[in-house]
Length: 299
Image (tube, rainbow, N blue to C red; front, side):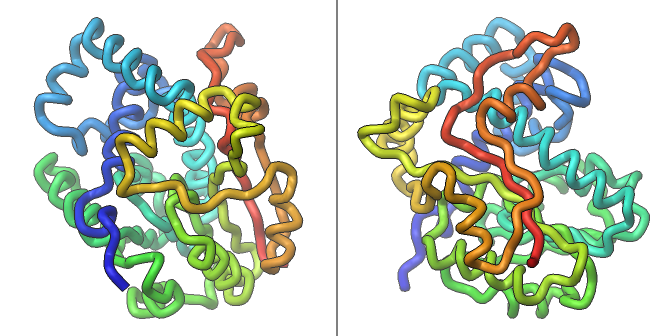
């Protein structure tokens, strides 16, 4: 099976996610709305320079919003949601956290001081992972002993075999974080991953991921920014096409069919009210409307 473009080169979407987290960090400078002070290290040097200049940063955000309305806000909320789960796992001394498609995730480094005994496995395609490691080293950031980098092609390689070879133990409680990944995978790869977790994960284990609801010509207009998102992905990110989605209202039954029970679910309105509120209680903006968060555990 031939590799797709996303396996051949570092992920563009991972880069743009880091850019949005870096912008949020400069704009908001707080733990709720802009906590990722390391995101800028994954950007080209000239990006980092220009992000320091507020008018240029504001213009960059406006341009991004033109192509992907609400996506910067969505990234802010997504970072906060998975940060919370990650920290809760560290605080409860969960033995293992597995980042499925880690991209330029920085939680293992931002929260290193809170990590007493949790082993963290970062799984991603080799090209993106190699660039991440290079960026971390150039930034002279310490790589915690608890972190293991594990290359994988999710569409072609066995998750069970890859984790086992990396030393991840199936007999330990584990939090699986699958952030910003499912929609780029083939349906078979998504279902194989969920079924693997439902079959082998120990009691107390969980998987958290985000997904998109299925879009059609008839429903695109219902979701803020969805039509622009689809058009931009097709025009500018053809090598990272959206492949997987779940019909609105079907996530619970979808999980049950794969041996998982839903613990928590947030739609676009709940995402906004929970994670996109300023200190005075006002909303900082609307998030792209067809994304959802879900936390599930084996039945």
